[in-house]
Image (cartoon, rainbow, N blue to C red; front, top):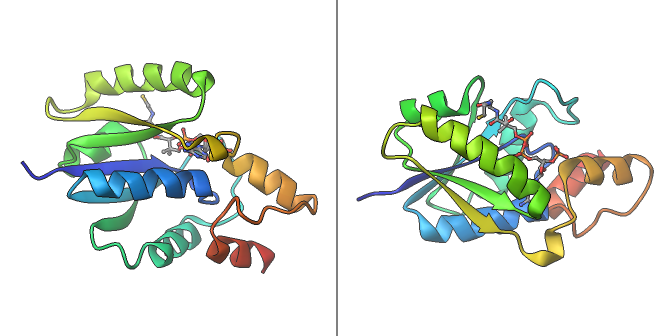
Length: 157
Ligand code: COA
């Protein structure tokens, strides 16, 4: 069976932690879609279009990685686009507590063929989040090595 996986997030901005999960997931599945979602409760640094463009540029040499966006229920997007896997990254037990609730709720909403799969983050990135990167950067701290160089250039602009 051909496997089509989704890795979703706000990616505002995409970090090295996300990169790690994406490069590993891309090896596991025939197709991996990076789904840039809108989280209305978060103020954003980059527009949805900017985030999509940056991510597309970073993964342009990955034949099986594509970029898309969605709004509304994740499960609706997953069911309507024939995904069979939703990939999530786990950094800590705090992530686990949140993720198990989401996965179990989504399981009710997903088509029968969809599974949520968790990848453990590389420990060198376990403390990174998009918000912490934005906060340190905004206050003048060095975030090089925490986001891809292409993203850092755009942040500096
Ligand atoms: N490495 C580094 N950071 C990571 C990471 C990893 N492996 N995995 C997650 N993170 C960070 C993200 O950068 C994000 O940081 P932030 O809070 O500082 O922005 C944080 O962990 C949470 O990530 P995530 O859980 O992916 O949330 P998100 O806000 O990025 O996701 C949506 C946004 C749109 C994908 C999500 O809200 C969604 O699916 N919405 C749909 C609504 C829905 O279906 N609701 C019902 C669910 S049952």
